[in-house]
Image (spheres, each protein chain N blue to C red):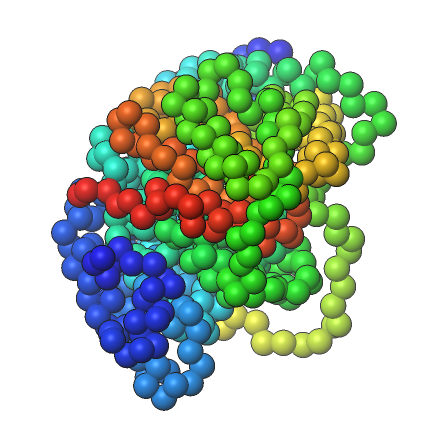
Length: 94
Length: 486
């Protein structure tokens, strides 16, 4: 399953990246090589094997629903690139 | 020995006996930094003001004889992916240049409570993506044993700073081998604890089902000291596990009579450096001669670990890195006039090459049509890899392997071929996928005088077994007492 230029452009868009012409070529080649390596997994029989998503078996972790102070709003907004009226400011969406 | 090259254990005795003050150690460490960091380049930021204030507080505790721990007054360096309130934290990424986090990671809070002194933030591969620290968004770090070589990665700054005497201990983080492999290449002791042993709260996430924070030190005993202070359940990390934290340090028992050691065939394969193999087998002999029982074991799915890892870890990374969108923190492109364009341009400017490569790979394996073939398949094979270890641990107590197939390689040698770079983590990845704890210790030097690392893998939450075995080995040998000549 070699990766094509089109795939790379498609994934870049899904990943919210603008990539240069040079990068498209480079990633097409490198991602193909990596995926070719990864394709070895296909030959392993995994019928009836439960997928493993965590290293240590943990079930849902519950806690009491108690109010606690969260991080100070000002401190959080201080780290933002653009702020107005105590909100994060972003370019127009609609 | 110079103070900056001492162990935590020895410094603690000297502090307690009031032969030295925390400030003396800190002076020695910063003087050392002044002399060698321009060559090693392990630090991204020195936190001198904070450090001297912490040293004063430590001094106060010692004078009043109150609340003294083995870490009180000990200078510790921090990998730059752990947040400390108000102190710039970059993850070695341009994206986060100048970012001052509004909160502190649990591990750092715990070290503060123990009285440790923070020397600064250490270099790493950007977002911990790499095995050489060459992917740092700022500059590469050099190996103190040979400045033309890499220190390993991604916790290259942590391993190199300890090896060069620029801190007494350091914290690193390990996803696929990022503590163990640099510890091996820099001749120091590095532990990746069991997944869930140490809180990840405040660690900038890479692969959430794999990431663990762990200590880098000269000795296994020092490592045990740091682990006992950072381990434990944290309500802010629901994947941290509520299991008692023993006093790993006081409990160290170096009697290895009858210890069952597994040697997996799959880790001594063709392609591994001959000298590395020889040194590791010599170390195994030391265990055997002193009463351990060595047994060959099989871990049949080992060769697929790397493929599983590069699917699972990149998938998790691609979703974790979605948070860098130029809105709440980090770099923003102000020229874009709509939201999507702002995301794209900010991310394009802020991310390095390897970061983009991993995001793209992760996005691909999670994308519609490929999810089952790649991501789900990898999760299933991950289970088979874990089953291999479960079976092996029915017969043995610990497993010994090389940490890395080679000693330190040259800067630039693998940078253009991501696949060969990925292969340098081949031995550390499988235990990580299974969540298992593993420690890397120095077991000698090759003909180029570069350190060789030995990996000891234990059962889940059996860190004590690793410290016992490593401390035994360090009692018999003196590789951990060698210091690089820089």
